[in-house]
Image 1 (cartoon, rainbow over the protein chains, first blue to last red):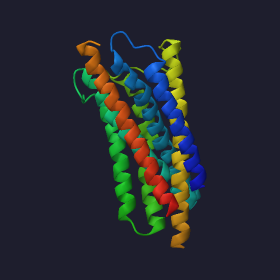
Image 2 (image 1 turned 45 degrees about the horizontal axis):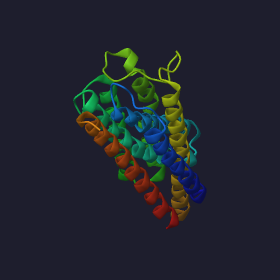
Image 3 (image 1 turned 90 degrees about the vertical axis):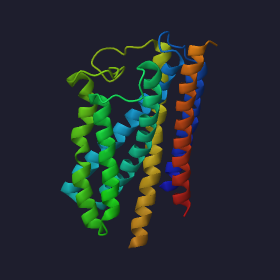
Image 4 (image 1 turned 30 degrees about the vertical axis):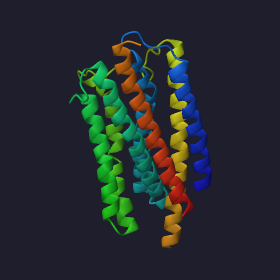
Amino acid sequence: MTRGGLWISGLAMAGIAGVYWLALLGTPTERWQGLSQKILYIHAPAAWAALLAFGLVGVASAAYLFLRDIRLDTFAEASAEVGLAFSAIMLTTGPLWGRPVWGSWWEWEPRLTLTLLLVLLFVGYRALRNALDFPEDRARYSAVVGVMALVLVPFVHLSVYLFRTIHPQPVLLKPSAPSMPWEMLRTLLTSIGAFTLLYIGFVTARYGIGRRRQQEAG
Amino acid sequence: MNQEQATTGGYMVAAYLITAVILLGYFASLYRRGRR
């Protein structure tokens, strides 16, 4: 499973190299934001992959609390770690876009603050996992923390509608048509596809590593 | 290329490079743990 996950990840990384080429050479430059607008093609897909990863931690954690299947806990652990990797991209590319467009690296506004809270929740989730020795206790307690993602992830997505915020509104995940010209939308959709495949590859590989560790531990 | 393009281009290049480093680094971490 680990090997398969690494192959899928390698394929997805080649896809992301293609996204780089498409974004930098095959997509027009936006008139007002200039070249910094092209950061969107990695920031938004990374944010999507991070929220997908954390959302699935929530689903797996809730399922674990009902079914007590240790594989669900292993999946949650894998997805949380992968989510933190994508969060690192989201939290570094966001300020690199904000500085030239907003004039500041960070704003304590609802979307950014809630996203940071979500990421810190999962930093705590990892710390909790490392602090507990018994697998059953670790799985049960971390599932209680993981299930909070089911509340926070939709809240993060909807925060731009619920509060006054300077963060841009969703381009794709909204009731009306995508608010972007096709040349740009094509690059964004390709990138979302590549990041989703990368999430699948990373989480499959990490799940395989987690399962092997359990088998070695007996 | 004018001054403004050079500045926004700098932020864009930084973002793309950081993304590549994080993705390659995490892939290498999984590869190393997977082979052990």
